[in-house]
Image 1 (cartoon, rainbow, N blue to C red):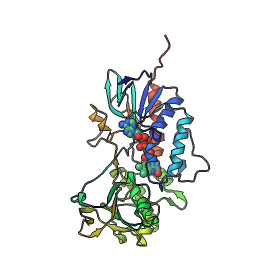
Image 2: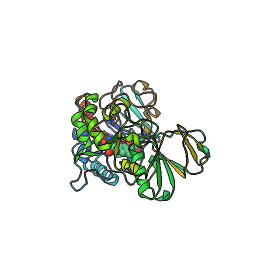
Image 3: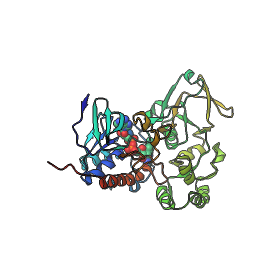
Image 4: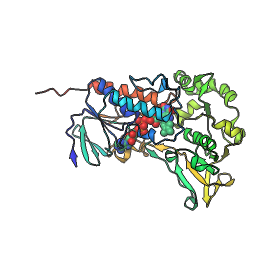
Length: 383
Ligand SMILES: Cc1cc2nc3c(=O)[nH]c(=O)nc-3n(C[C@H](O)[C@H](O)[C@H](O)COP(=O)(O)OP(=O)(O)OC[C@H]3O[C@@H](n4cnc5c(N)ncnc54)[C@H](O)[C@@H]3O)c2cc1C
Protein backbone atom coordinates (compact mmCIF):
# COMPACT_ATOMS: atom_id res chain seq x y z
CA UNK A 1 0.00 0.00 0.00
CA UNK A 2 1.28 3.51 -0.79
CA UNK A 3 0.49 6.86 0.81
CA UNK A 4 -0.43 9.64 -1.61
CA UNK A 5 1.86 12.66 -1.17
CA UNK A 6 -0.94 14.87 -2.58
CA UNK A 7 -1.56 18.24 -0.93
CA UNK A 8 -5.23 18.22 -1.87
CA UNK A 9 -7.50 20.36 0.27
CA UNK A 10 -10.46 18.30 -0.92
CA UNK A 11 -10.84 14.72 -2.01
CA UNK A 12 -13.83 14.01 -4.23
CA UNK A 13 -15.07 10.44 -4.69
CA UNK A 14 -16.58 9.78 -8.14
CA UNK A 15 -15.88 11.22 -11.60
CA UNK A 16 -19.48 11.41 -12.76
CA UNK A 17 -21.37 14.66 -13.34
CA UNK A 18 -21.33 15.58 -9.64
CA UNK A 19 -17.66 14.88 -8.93
CA UNK A 20 -16.53 16.69 -12.07
CA UNK A 21 -18.77 19.69 -11.29
CA UNK A 22 -17.30 20.00 -7.77
CA UNK A 23 -13.77 19.60 -9.16
CA UNK A 24 -14.36 22.41 -11.66
CA UNK A 25 -15.94 24.76 -9.09
CA UNK A 26 -13.00 24.22 -6.70
CA UNK A 27 -10.45 24.59 -9.49
CA UNK A 28 -11.95 27.96 -10.46
CA UNK A 29 -11.32 29.03 -6.87
CA UNK A 30 -7.73 27.69 -6.91
CA UNK A 31 -8.51 25.09 -4.27
CA UNK A 32 -6.37 21.96 -4.79
CA UNK A 33 -8.50 18.87 -5.21
CA UNK A 34 -8.29 15.35 -6.53
CA UNK A 35 -11.04 13.08 -7.81
CA UNK A 36 -10.86 9.36 -7.02
CA UNK A 37 -12.68 7.23 -9.59
CA UNK A 38 -13.01 3.47 -9.44
CA UNK A 39 -13.25 2.96 -13.20
CA UNK A 40 -10.79 3.98 -15.90
CA UNK A 41 -12.92 6.75 -17.46
CA UNK A 42 -15.12 9.68 -16.47
CA UNK A 43 -18.92 9.24 -16.73
CA UNK A 44 -18.73 5.50 -15.98
CA UNK A 45 -22.38 5.22 -14.93
CA UNK A 46 -23.67 6.71 -18.19
CA UNK A 47 -21.30 4.64 -20.34
CA UNK A 48 -22.90 1.48 -18.95
CA UNK A 49 -26.49 2.52 -19.69
CA UNK A 50 -28.66 1.21 -22.55
CA UNK A 51 -28.09 2.44 -26.10
CA UNK A 52 -31.47 4.19 -26.53
CA UNK A 53 -31.04 6.39 -23.45
CA UNK A 54 -31.35 10.16 -23.88
CA UNK A 55 -31.61 12.73 -21.13
CA UNK A 56 -35.22 13.06 -20.03
CA UNK A 57 -34.38 16.59 -18.96
CA UNK A 58 -33.56 19.26 -21.56
CA UNK A 59 -29.95 20.25 -22.13
CA UNK A 60 -30.36 23.85 -21.00
CA UNK A 61 -31.48 22.65 -17.57
CA UNK A 62 -28.97 19.79 -17.39
CA UNK A 63 -25.66 21.56 -17.89
CA UNK A 64 -22.83 21.60 -15.36
CA UNK A 65 -21.31 24.86 -14.08
CA UNK A 66 -19.49 27.07 -16.61
CA UNK A 67 -20.04 24.80 -19.65
CA UNK A 68 -23.05 24.70 -21.97
CA UNK A 69 -23.87 21.68 -24.09
CA UNK A 70 -22.78 22.15 -27.72
CA UNK A 71 -25.28 24.05 -29.90
CA UNK A 72 -25.51 21.14 -32.35
CA UNK A 73 -26.70 18.74 -29.64
CA UNK A 74 -30.45 18.05 -29.68
CA UNK A 75 -32.67 19.34 -26.89
CA UNK A 76 -32.42 15.93 -25.18
CA UNK A 77 -28.81 14.72 -25.65
CA UNK A 78 -28.11 11.02 -26.11
CA UNK A 79 -26.13 8.85 -23.71
CA UNK A 80 -23.03 9.09 -25.91
CA UNK A 81 -23.34 12.87 -26.24
CA UNK A 82 -23.55 13.22 -22.47
CA UNK A 83 -20.44 11.06 -22.07
CA UNK A 84 -18.55 13.23 -24.61
CA UNK A 85 -19.74 16.35 -22.77
CA UNK A 86 -18.36 14.94 -19.48
CA UNK A 87 -15.03 14.00 -21.11
CA UNK A 88 -14.70 17.51 -22.57
CA UNK A 89 -15.69 19.01 -19.22
CA UNK A 90 -12.89 17.16 -17.37
CA UNK A 91 -10.40 18.25 -20.08
CA UNK A 92 -11.59 21.89 -20.14
CA UNK A 93 -10.93 22.31 -16.41
CA UNK A 94 -7.85 20.06 -16.46
CA UNK A 95 -9.28 18.07 -13.55
CA UNK A 96 -6.97 15.82 -11.56
CA UNK A 97 -8.86 12.54 -11.82
CA UNK A 98 -7.10 9.50 -10.34
CA UNK A 99 -8.55 6.52 -12.22
CA UNK A 100 -8.76 2.92 -10.99
CA UNK A 101 -9.01 4.18 -7.42
CA UNK A 102 -11.87 2.37 -5.72
CA UNK A 103 -12.54 3.84 -2.30
CA UNK A 104 -12.94 1.09 0.28
CA UNK A 105 -13.06 3.20 3.43
CA UNK A 106 -13.21 6.84 4.50
CA UNK A 107 -12.70 7.96 8.11
CA UNK A 108 -12.06 11.24 9.88
CA UNK A 109 -9.06 11.25 12.20
CA UNK A 110 -7.45 14.33 13.73
CA UNK A 111 -9.12 16.87 11.41
CA UNK A 112 -8.18 14.90 8.30
CA UNK A 113 -10.13 12.52 6.08
CA UNK A 114 -8.28 9.27 5.53
CA UNK A 115 -9.55 7.86 2.28
CA UNK A 116 -8.35 4.37 1.50
CA UNK A 117 -8.46 2.85 -1.97
CA UNK A 118 -7.40 -0.67 -2.90
CA UNK A 119 -3.75 0.42 -2.97
CA UNK A 120 -3.34 4.00 -1.72
CA UNK A 121 -4.17 6.10 1.34
CA UNK A 122 -5.18 9.68 0.44
CA UNK A 123 -5.67 12.39 3.09
CA UNK A 124 -7.26 15.84 3.08
CA UNK A 125 -9.28 18.14 5.38
CA UNK A 126 -12.41 17.94 3.17
CA UNK A 127 -14.20 15.03 1.56
CA UNK A 128 -16.99 15.27 -1.02
CA UNK A 129 -18.89 12.08 -1.74
CA UNK A 130 -20.23 12.17 -5.30
CA UNK A 131 -20.60 8.45 -6.01
CA UNK A 132 -24.07 8.76 -7.47
CA UNK A 133 -27.56 7.83 -6.41
CA UNK A 134 -27.32 4.92 -8.87
CA UNK A 135 -24.24 3.35 -7.22
CA UNK A 136 -25.71 -0.11 -6.61
CA UNK A 137 -28.41 -1.87 -8.59
CA UNK A 138 -31.34 -2.98 -6.44
CA UNK A 139 -32.05 -6.66 -7.19
CA UNK A 140 -35.21 -7.96 -5.51
CA UNK A 141 -35.75 -11.70 -5.10
CA UNK A 142 -38.97 -13.67 -5.38
CA UNK A 143 -39.90 -17.23 -4.49
CA UNK A 144 -39.01 -19.63 -7.26
CA UNK A 145 -36.79 -17.13 -9.07
CA UNK A 146 -33.96 -19.65 -9.30
CA UNK A 147 -36.21 -22.00 -11.30
CA UNK A 148 -36.57 -19.46 -14.15
CA UNK A 149 -34.74 -20.96 -17.13
CA UNK A 150 -34.18 -17.70 -19.05
CA UNK A 151 -31.98 -14.67 -18.59
CA UNK A 152 -32.67 -12.31 -15.66
CA UNK A 153 -30.72 -9.03 -15.81
CA UNK A 154 -30.84 -5.67 -14.04
CA UNK A 155 -31.61 -2.65 -16.24
CA UNK A 156 -28.01 -1.47 -15.65
CA UNK A 157 -26.85 -4.52 -17.70
CA UNK A 158 -29.39 -4.03 -20.52
CA UNK A 159 -27.91 -2.64 -23.76
CA UNK A 160 -30.64 -3.07 -26.38
CA UNK A 161 -33.42 -5.43 -27.41
CA UNK A 162 -31.63 -7.13 -30.32
CA UNK A 163 -31.03 -10.40 -28.48
CA UNK A 164 -34.69 -10.56 -27.37
CA UNK A 165 -36.28 -10.39 -30.86
CA UNK A 166 -39.47 -12.48 -30.94
CA UNK A 167 -39.21 -13.21 -27.19
CA UNK A 168 -41.65 -12.52 -24.37
CA UNK A 169 -39.78 -10.23 -22.01
CA UNK A 170 -41.03 -9.03 -18.64
CA UNK A 171 -39.73 -5.65 -17.52
CA UNK A 172 -40.20 -5.26 -13.77
CA UNK A 173 -40.68 -1.64 -12.70
CA UNK A 174 -42.41 1.43 -14.12
CA UNK A 175 -39.67 4.01 -13.59
CA UNK A 176 -38.07 5.86 -16.47
CA UNK A 177 -35.65 3.02 -17.27
CA UNK A 178 -38.42 0.40 -17.23
CA UNK A 179 -40.72 2.51 -19.40
CA UNK A 180 -38.05 3.19 -22.01
CA UNK A 181 -36.63 -0.37 -22.04
CA UNK A 182 -40.14 -1.68 -22.80
CA UNK A 183 -40.26 0.71 -25.79
CA UNK A 184 -36.79 -0.40 -26.89
CA UNK A 185 -37.78 -4.08 -26.69
CA UNK A 186 -40.82 -3.41 -28.88
CA UNK A 187 -38.67 -1.51 -31.39
CA UNK A 188 -36.37 -4.55 -31.59
CA UNK A 189 -39.22 -6.95 -32.33
CA UNK A 190 -39.58 -8.40 -28.83
CA UNK A 191 -42.92 -8.75 -26.99
CA UNK A 192 -42.56 -6.67 -23.82
CA UNK A 193 -44.71 -6.66 -20.71
CA UNK A 194 -44.42 -4.42 -17.66
CA UNK A 195 -44.91 -5.57 -14.06
CA UNK A 196 -46.12 -2.55 -12.11
CA UNK A 197 -46.41 -3.05 -8.35
CA UNK A 198 -47.31 0.41 -7.13
CA UNK A 199 -49.73 3.13 -8.10
CA UNK A 200 -48.04 5.61 -10.46
CA UNK A 201 -48.10 9.02 -12.10
CA UNK A 202 -47.31 9.62 -15.77
CA UNK A 203 -46.20 12.96 -17.21
CA UNK A 204 -45.28 13.94 -20.79
CA UNK A 205 -41.69 15.02 -21.55
CA UNK A 206 -43.04 18.32 -22.93
CA UNK A 207 -46.26 20.30 -22.69
CA UNK A 208 -47.07 22.58 -25.65
CA UNK A 209 -43.40 22.38 -26.70
CA UNK A 210 -42.14 23.41 -23.25
CA UNK A 211 -39.90 20.86 -21.45
CA UNK A 212 -41.73 19.48 -18.41
CA UNK A 213 -38.65 20.32 -16.34
CA UNK A 214 -38.99 24.04 -17.08
CA UNK A 215 -42.57 23.86 -15.82
CA UNK A 216 -41.33 21.95 -12.72
CA UNK A 217 -38.75 24.68 -12.03
CA UNK A 218 -41.37 27.45 -12.10
CA UNK A 219 -43.81 25.42 -10.01
CA UNK A 220 -41.18 24.35 -7.48
CA UNK A 221 -41.78 27.65 -5.69
CA UNK A 222 -45.42 26.64 -5.06
CA UNK A 223 -46.55 24.14 -2.40
CA UNK A 224 -46.49 20.68 -4.03
CA UNK A 225 -50.22 20.12 -3.53
CA UNK A 226 -50.97 23.38 -5.33
CA UNK A 227 -48.70 22.54 -8.28
CA UNK A 228 -50.42 19.16 -8.53
CA UNK A 229 -53.89 20.75 -8.37
CA UNK A 230 -52.97 23.18 -11.18
CA UNK A 231 -51.52 20.38 -13.35
CA UNK A 232 -54.18 17.71 -12.77
CA UNK A 233 -56.70 18.77 -15.46
CA UNK A 234 -53.94 19.32 -18.05
CA UNK A 235 -52.35 15.92 -17.31
CA UNK A 236 -55.75 14.24 -17.49
CA UNK A 237 -56.22 15.76 -20.95
CA UNK A 238 -52.71 14.94 -22.26
CA UNK A 239 -52.04 11.57 -20.63
CA UNK A 240 -55.64 10.32 -20.40
CA UNK A 241 -57.05 7.78 -18.00
CA UNK A 242 -54.18 5.39 -17.22
CA UNK A 243 -56.41 3.12 -15.14
CA UNK A 244 -58.02 1.82 -18.36
CA UNK A 245 -54.80 -0.05 -19.10
CA UNK A 246 -54.27 -1.87 -15.82
CA UNK A 247 -52.26 0.89 -14.12
CA UNK A 248 -53.28 2.37 -10.77
CA UNK A 249 -53.09 6.16 -10.41
CA UNK A 250 -51.43 7.54 -7.28
CA UNK A 251 -53.92 9.51 -5.18
CA UNK A 252 -51.53 12.50 -5.28
CA UNK A 253 -49.76 14.20 -8.19
CA UNK A 254 -46.18 14.12 -9.53
CA UNK A 255 -44.81 17.04 -7.44
CA UNK A 256 -46.02 15.45 -4.18
CA UNK A 257 -44.75 12.05 -5.34
CA UNK A 258 -41.21 13.37 -5.86
CA UNK A 259 -41.04 15.17 -2.52
CA UNK A 260 -42.88 12.50 -0.49
CA UNK A 261 -41.73 9.21 -2.08
CA UNK A 262 -38.41 10.43 -3.57
CA UNK A 263 -39.48 8.84 -6.85
CA UNK A 264 -39.65 10.43 -10.27
CA UNK A 265 -42.93 9.79 -12.13
CA UNK A 266 -42.79 8.15 -15.55
CA UNK A 267 -41.68 10.81 -18.03
CA UNK A 268 -43.36 9.30 -21.05
CA UNK A 269 -41.16 8.82 -24.12
CA UNK A 270 -43.65 6.60 -25.97
CA UNK A 271 -44.50 3.90 -23.41
CA UNK A 272 -48.14 4.93 -22.96
CA UNK A 273 -48.83 4.93 -26.72
CA UNK A 274 -47.53 1.35 -26.99
CA UNK A 275 -49.59 0.31 -23.95
CA UNK A 276 -52.72 1.87 -25.48
CA UNK A 277 -52.04 0.11 -28.80
CA UNK A 278 -51.60 -3.23 -27.03
CA UNK A 279 -47.89 -3.62 -27.88
CA UNK A 280 -46.90 -3.55 -24.19
CA UNK A 281 -48.93 -5.64 -21.72
CA UNK A 282 -49.33 -4.41 -18.15
CA UNK A 283 -49.37 -6.77 -15.16
CA UNK A 284 -49.48 -6.18 -11.40
CA UNK A 285 -46.42 -6.68 -9.18
CA UNK A 286 -44.54 -9.98 -9.40
CA UNK A 287 -45.78 -12.61 -6.93
CA UNK A 288 -43.61 -15.66 -7.63
CA UNK A 289 -41.76 -17.60 -10.31
CA UNK A 290 -42.34 -21.22 -11.25
CA UNK A 291 -40.07 -22.23 -14.13
CA UNK A 292 -40.81 -19.80 -16.94
CA UNK A 293 -44.28 -19.00 -15.52
CA UNK A 294 -44.62 -15.89 -13.44
CA UNK A 295 -47.61 -15.33 -11.16
CA UNK A 296 -48.53 -11.74 -10.49
CA UNK A 297 -50.21 -10.21 -7.44
CA UNK A 298 -53.94 -10.73 -7.91
CA UNK A 299 -53.43 -14.16 -9.49
CA UNK A 300 -52.78 -13.60 -13.24
CA UNK A 301 -50.01 -15.76 -14.73
CA UNK A 302 -47.98 -15.67 -17.93
CA UNK A 303 -44.88 -17.28 -19.47
CA UNK A 304 -41.72 -15.34 -20.26
CA UNK A 305 -38.37 -15.98 -21.92
CA UNK A 306 -36.42 -13.25 -20.12
CA UNK A 307 -36.78 -10.71 -17.32
CA UNK A 308 -35.29 -7.21 -17.02
CA UNK A 309 -35.30 -5.82 -13.48
CA UNK A 310 -35.77 -2.06 -13.81
CA UNK A 311 -36.01 -1.94 -10.04
CA UNK A 312 -33.77 1.00 -9.34
CA UNK A 313 -30.64 1.66 -7.34
CA UNK A 314 -29.37 2.60 -3.89
CA UNK A 315 -26.43 4.91 -3.09
CA UNK A 316 -25.17 2.71 -0.20
CA UNK A 317 -22.44 5.10 0.95
CA UNK A 318 -22.37 3.11 4.21
CA UNK A 319 -20.26 0.49 2.42
CA UNK A 320 -17.13 2.62 2.67
CA UNK A 321 -18.09 5.50 4.97
CA UNK A 322 -17.49 3.85 8.30
CA UNK A 323 -18.08 5.47 11.72
CA UNK A 324 -20.53 7.98 10.22
CA UNK A 325 -23.99 6.45 10.64
CA UNK A 326 -25.45 9.80 11.78
CA UNK A 327 -25.29 11.19 8.22
CA UNK A 328 -27.13 8.48 6.28
CA UNK A 329 -30.15 6.24 6.75
CA UNK A 330 -30.14 2.47 7.27
CA UNK A 331 -29.85 1.90 3.50
CA UNK A 332 -26.87 4.22 3.16
CA UNK A 333 -28.74 7.13 1.56
CA UNK A 334 -27.28 10.45 2.76
CA UNK A 335 -29.52 12.63 4.96
CA UNK A 336 -28.20 15.82 3.39
CA UNK A 337 -26.84 16.90 0.03
CA UNK A 338 -25.32 20.14 -1.21
CA UNK A 339 -23.95 21.49 2.06
CA UNK A 340 -21.69 20.44 4.94
CA UNK A 341 -23.13 17.30 6.56
CA UNK A 342 -23.32 16.78 10.33
CA UNK A 343 -19.64 15.74 10.28
CA UNK A 344 -17.03 18.49 9.77
CA UNK A 345 -15.46 18.61 6.31
CA UNK A 346 -17.87 16.02 4.87
CA UNK A 347 -20.15 16.88 1.96
CA UNK A 348 -22.49 14.91 -0.30
CA UNK A 349 -23.36 16.02 -3.83
CA UNK A 350 -26.01 14.59 -6.15
CA UNK A 351 -28.44 12.93 -3.75
CA UNK A 352 -31.48 15.19 -4.14
CA UNK A 353 -34.29 13.52 -6.08
CA UNK A 354 -35.85 16.69 -7.37
CA UNK A 355 -38.76 17.83 -9.57
CA UNK A 356 -36.27 20.20 -11.20
CA UNK A 357 -33.91 17.46 -12.48
CA UNK A 358 -30.93 15.87 -10.71
CA UNK A 359 -28.29 17.28 -13.07
CA UNK A 360 -29.60 20.80 -12.50
CA UNK A 361 -29.47 20.23 -8.75
CA UNK A 362 -25.93 18.80 -9.02
CA UNK A 363 -24.85 22.04 -10.66
CA UNK A 364 -26.42 24.16 -7.91
CA UNK A 365 -25.02 21.93 -5.14
CA UNK A 366 -21.49 21.90 -6.61
CA UNK A 367 -21.31 25.71 -6.62
CA UNK A 368 -22.66 25.88 -3.07
CA UNK A 369 -20.24 23.26 -1.70
CA UNK A 370 -17.28 24.96 -3.41
CA UNK A 371 -18.23 28.31 -1.90
CA UNK A 372 -18.47 26.79 1.63
CA UNK A 373 -15.09 25.05 1.23
CA UNK A 374 -13.58 28.27 -0.17
CA UNK A 375 -14.83 30.27 2.82
CA UNK A 376 -12.80 27.98 5.14
CA UNK A 377 -9.77 27.57 2.89
CA UNK A 378 -6.35 28.61 4.16
CA UNK A 379 -3.73 28.19 1.42
CA UNK A 380 -0.46 26.39 2.24
CA UNK A 381 2.05 29.25 2.04
CA UNK A 382 5.68 28.44 1.16
CA UNK A 383 8.06 28.66 4.18
C1 LIG B 1 -30.79 5.67 -16.42
C2 LIG B 1 -30.68 7.04 -15.79
C3 LIG B 1 -31.17 8.16 -16.47
C4 LIG B 1 -31.07 9.43 -15.87
N1 LIG B 1 -31.55 10.50 -16.58
C5 LIG B 1 -31.45 11.73 -16.04
C6 LIG B 1 -31.91 12.89 -16.75
O1 LIG B 1 -32.41 12.80 -17.87
N2 LIG B 1 -31.76 14.10 -16.15
C7 LIG B 1 -31.21 14.26 -14.91
O2 LIG B 1 -31.12 15.40 -14.42
N3 LIG B 1 -30.78 13.19 -14.22
C8 LIG B 1 -30.88 11.94 -14.74
N4 LIG B 1 -30.44 10.86 -14.02
C9 LIG B 1 -29.99 11.04 -12.63
C10 LIG B 1 -28.56 11.63 -12.46
O3 LIG B 1 -28.57 12.98 -12.85
C11 LIG B 1 -27.51 10.93 -13.26
O4 LIG B 1 -27.43 9.58 -12.85
C12 LIG B 1 -26.11 11.54 -13.09
O5 LIG B 1 -25.21 10.80 -13.88
C13 LIG B 1 -25.65 11.52 -11.64
O6 LIG B 1 -24.31 11.93 -11.59
P1 LIG B 1 -23.41 11.57 -10.33
O7 LIG B 1 -22.06 12.12 -10.61
O8 LIG B 1 -24.11 11.96 -9.10
O9 LIG B 1 -23.36 9.98 -10.33
P2 LIG B 1 -22.72 8.97 -11.36
O10 LIG B 1 -22.85 9.45 -12.76
O11 LIG B 1 -23.31 7.64 -11.02
O12 LIG B 1 -21.17 8.97 -11.01
C14 LIG B 1 -20.65 8.40 -9.82
C15 LIG B 1 -19.23 7.96 -10.06
O13 LIG B 1 -18.71 7.48 -8.83
C16 LIG B 1 -17.91 6.34 -9.08
N5 LIG B 1 -17.86 5.57 -7.83
C17 LIG B 1 -18.87 4.92 -7.18
N6 LIG B 1 -18.41 4.30 -6.08
C18 LIG B 1 -17.08 4.57 -6.00
C19 LIG B 1 -16.06 4.22 -5.08
N7 LIG B 1 -16.29 3.47 -4.00
N8 LIG B 1 -14.80 4.67 -5.32
C20 LIG B 1 -14.51 5.43 -6.40
N9 LIG B 1 -15.45 5.79 -7.32
C21 LIG B 1 -16.72 5.37 -7.11
C22 LIG B 1 -18.65 5.64 -10.21
O14 LIG B 1 -17.78 4.76 -10.93
C23 LIG B 1 -19.11 6.82 -11.07
O15 LIG B 1 -18.19 7.16 -12.06
C24 LIG B 1 -30.50 9.59 -14.59
C25 LIG B 1 -30.02 8.46 -13.92
C26 LIG B 1 -30.10 7.20 -14.51
C27 LIG B 1 -29.56 6.01 -13.74
